[in-house]
Every structure is written in structure tokens, then in C-alpha cells.
Image 1 (cartoon, helix red, strand yellow):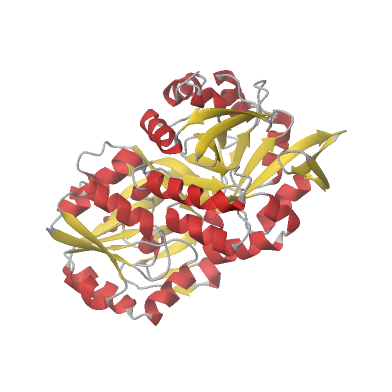
Image 2: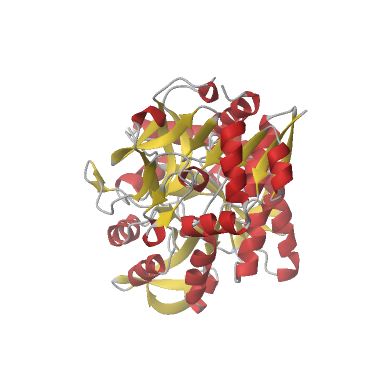
Length: 212
Length: 252
């Protein structure tokens, strides 16, 4: 049995993420934990997150788990989800500017309020099922069709400095980065735990991924 | 291509059973919520909404168990409404596996509650449910299943709730609810023109064209229906195919 740790820092849909991981992997023990040792000992690590980014970053720092995230990002298969993806960037426009963990180069920006598609004003948050266009091949896209729909709910999006890190894009008024990947790190803006079959498939792929 | 319009089946739950009333009065038993949720998930529902209409607060725990059970096997967004009055109610539902809560009466009596909830849990999980009824040339907010007028203008209320942090609005026409003659699309499009968050149209669906009209005429982002799905008049699959044939982008 391998283990996957879901980092519990008081923010986020831990229940949904851990249930979906349990469902996706039959040879995996899912541990929801705020304990640094337990997280560092796990084979794989998931950083979930919902809500405001400043609260997320503050909680990570207060608990010292920011260091644990830094360490895990160097050593094992790591998956960031939603705000857990945004937290990996350098900074976010949210909450009048928030410094993030800086594991990836790039910023988190807010969708403009006046974006249009045809004649419709695009609402913010971007909420619902949108298409994820795979820009690069990756083990986590295995058995997931090109342009499959995943569930999104967010008002901020990631803009990477280097296009090399973009592994998927999505169109919502602008094209934005909906997934990033680099070595052992993968992160998605959408919610696999709420994206039915394809979401569970992505989690299953993560649980089999060796980080290469 | 882009963001899909959503179809959301709604399960009115009374004491742990799915029921559906006609204009909130005549109640028919439609089955076990977990079983029905499973069926809708299989048929391709984009989200599920549970409205707890249990009269007695003693039986509210039942709803928590329903949500826990559904969340353990259905991996699409779940919204829970009915009797959400305190931060603790919200926390309990989110911990049980809900992704969003719908606040209705409590928002009318204490609008600050919406602000507090959005600050604490984020706007993305705060849906404000608006029950509106046409009064002369405008719409007013009604509470208690459409029985009590409040004198509040529905459009102004919708804007206020968004200002207070609602991430989504669930708009039900109390004139249409249970009638099967279609959404009040004038109400929907008027609200949509005044807010910049997603709007779910509710109340009145009797056939699949009504779902299409909610999007094309009502300009809603999502359409919600109950009885046409519970009694298997139509499957979600059929509904989506029908919407796709009408040129609406859906998740198939």
C-alpha cells in the first residue's frame, strides 16, 4: 500500500478531496493531516484549497506547513488543486496583493468584470464545466480525452512566466492556464474531486504516477 | 466552445425522503435521496441541489447523513439548502461534503448573515435562494414557501445579495413553481441583467423546451428542475441532448 497525504491547514474541501482519492485508488491509504512528519513520510502529497488566498497562505505559514510544501515539491509526486495551485505561484492580486510560495514563476490575476463571449457578459466567478485543452502530454492526462470538461469555480487564474510549465489551457473570455506541470509537481485550477469520471481518472493517474 | 450551461436536478427532502409539492403544498413521495442522486449522477447531472423542507428542526440531522452518504460516492458539486441559519449550520453541511449552501429565509431576516458567511467560507460556496412572486408591475420576495410577503423588491434584493458576497443566485418564481408551464423568464432575464454572478433559474419546468427557454430567453447560467426528473418523465440525458440540439453548449 502506498500513502497519499492531503494537507490539512484548516482551509478547503478536504472531505471531497479525500473521498475522491479513496474512490480513485484501491491500493492507496489516504491520510488527511496537518502533521509535518506524516506528510513528509507519505508517498504522494495533495495540497487542496478553497477560499481567499491570503487566509490560505497565512495558515500554511502559521502552521509551518509552507516549509513542508517546499520540501515535498522537491522530493515526491505533488498535486495542487485550485487555490492549492495558485499558492505555488509567486504572488496573487487577491486581497490587495498576496505573496505566495514562489515554487513556480508567475502571478495569479483576477478575471476582468467586462469580459464578453459573443454578446454575453462573462460572469465572475467562472463557475461550471469548462473544457481543458491538454497542451502537453503528461502521465496525469492518461485516459482523459482531449478537451474534456472539468468543474471550475474561481475568480482568479494563474499566469505563468514560462509557457513551458503550462500543461493545459481553458478558454473563458481569455485563454488561461488551467494546469501546470514541472518535474514531480502537477497542479490544476479545476476540481477533479467534483469532475465525475474524468476527475477520478486524473486522481487515479496521480496515485500511479512516480513523478517522472 | 467554452463554459457549459448546467442542468441541476433538485431534490426536496422531507424527513429523509424525496418529495415534490405542487406550489409547495401537495406533497408526493418520490423516493430515497441517495438512490435518486446516484441515478442523476449516472445520467450526467452537472450538479445536485438538496432542499431540506423538513418542518421540525429535530430531524435536520437526517439531512447531514444524506449529504455524507451522497458525497461519498457522487463526485459532482452538491448544494444544500433549507434551514441554513447560522455559521455552524454551514460548517456542518460543508463538513458533511456539501460544496455550497443555499441561504434563503435567514438572508431575508438578517442580510448580514450572508456577508458573514461569504467572509468565512468564501463566496464560491454561498448561494442565495430568492423566492419571488409577481406583484403588480414588479417582483417581491416571499418567505415560508411563498406564503409570506416581505415587501422587498426582488431585483434590488438580488443586487444587494451579490454586494454582500453571494457567489450565485438560485431564483425561484413562486408563481410558476409546480405549475409545469415554464420559468418566469422575464424575472430571470431581468435579474441576469442586473448581477454579474451565475443565476440558476427555478420554478415551473414541465417539459424540455422550458429548460431551453430558461437559457435562451431567461439568460440563466443553469436550469433547475425537480418533478420532471423524479418521476422519470425525462432523463437528464434526454434533457441535455435536447438542449444541445437547440444549440446550447452542454456537457455531454
